[in-house]
Length: 112
Length: 111
Image (tube, rainbow over all chains, first blue to last red; front, side):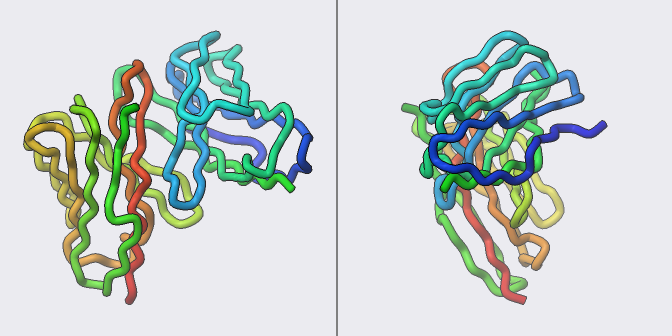
């Protein structure tokens, strides 16, 4: 099992550009999450999904959109990137029967 | 809204010294989890505490859940350089499936 994978690992964007981050999990988990991590801010929840076809807003959803068309995939989109979105993005998944969240390796995004 | 606070934010210790990080929630928690993130890595689950007053040990790590289920601590005895990283506590949010993370405590260990 690969666990949770994220693509790409690194990306540099110019202000106003768009991009999609892909998260995939092969553990058949119901819940999936997108977090951003900034120095001194811990992990802040952007959006999450409790099942295929469902999404919900987290603490910092503005400027991001998500989709969960397939159970194993959770996409995070930036429609018009801003320098404030420079961060490390982590995806995670969770089985409803166990509370442990499994994290992907992260995507380091820089917006110039 | 619900908040989970951790102190201290940073801690530098000499190898062999003890280390403690504290976690406080603004609301009563049904459980609390602890994660460790090595430098450049991703958070990895360490443990979950569920019962009031619960104490669990993993080798040199001791985890406690407060009697009121609003606070928790992680204590490391005789730190080693392998303990370096950021330790996060996390508690369930108000909505199903949500987890609220503390800001983390970053531990540096001088050999």
